[in-house]
Length: 244
Image (cartoon, rainbow, N blue to C red; front, side, top):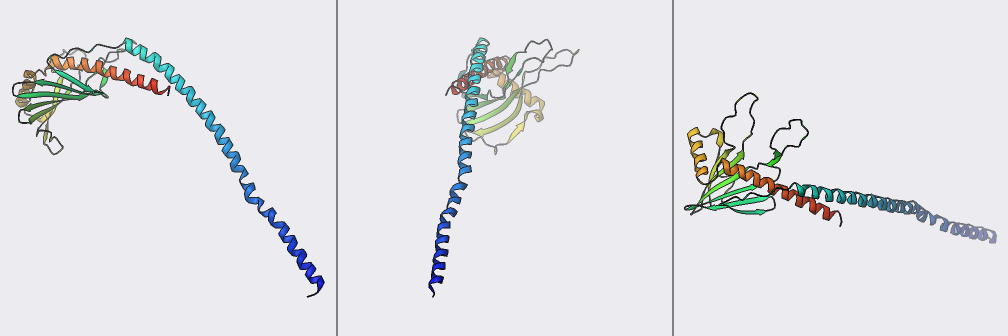
C-alpha cells in the first residue's frame, strides 16, 4: 500500500472520530424540555395548593358562623319515658322490658328530615322534622320475634275537606324470625294487603306495648333533635378538618 493511501485512510478515521462526540450531545439536549416542564408543574402545584388553602380558610370561616347559628336553633330531646335509649351516631335503639318479652325499636335518622308543613309562601322557613322508618321487634323469652316495619304517614288533606282522625304511622311489613336469624329468606307480608281486622289487631298490640300515636309523635320530636345534633357534630368535624 502506498504512503499516500495510508495518509488518506488515517485522515478519514480521524475525521469520523472527531464527529462522534457531537452525536452524543443529542440525548442530553432532548432532556431539556422535560426539565422545563417539571419546573412549570412545580409552579402550578404551588399555585393550586395556595388556592386550596384559601378555600379551606373560607370553609372554616363559614362553618364557624354556621355552627353558632345551628346551636342557637338546637332543640332539647324529650324524655321517652319507659324506654332505654342508646345511639351510635345516626343509629338509635330503644328497649323496653315487658311481661315475658322485650320490645326493641331500631331506626336510623339519616335522610329522614323534611318540612313539617308545606311552604306557605310567607318566606318563613317551615319547621324541619325527622320522621324515620322504624322497626319494632316483639321478642319472646325463647327468642321468637314478631317484627313490624313502620313508617310515618303523609299528613295531607285536600283543601275544604275535614281532617279525619287517622293514625300518624302505619305498618309497612310484618315478618317473624328466630333469634338473630333475620334475613331475606324470612317471609314478610306487606301491611297494605293484610286483612283489615288483622291489621287493626296488630296496631292494638303495638299500642298495648306503648307504640301508639302519642309515642310515635314524641319519637319524631326526639329524632329531630338527635338528627340536628348529629348535623352540628358533622359541621364541627368539617371545621376541624379544614384546619389540618
